[in-house]
Length: 122
Image (cartoon, helix red, strand yellow):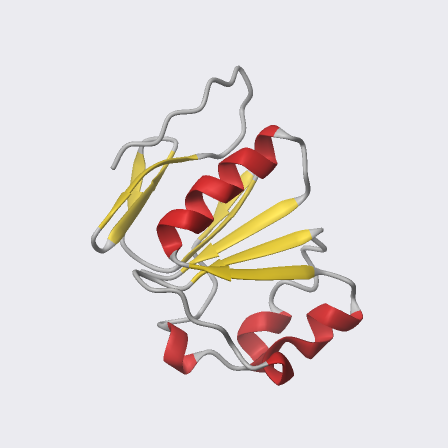
């Protein structure tokens, strides 16, 4: 599915998604990905939702987002709060949603100039 957002900015935005991939500004990625308004990172070592541990969530502490959107793949899953307790302590909101919903929500929040990070699993 293609996503479109009217924007004259240099933001990194999701422009598409499908089975096994997401696109950011027209570039296709087929691996877990972290997207921020000004940067795309491929160094997040998460493989899939079932393998997530505290270290995977602690990765986001240094980024200091207001909101972390975790795209859990084709279905929505929720992690146990013990895995992301440091994010809670740091007052970082975390929302779990399927990856397509995370892509759409990220684009909206970035357009509102919110400090948001999207971490997507495929």
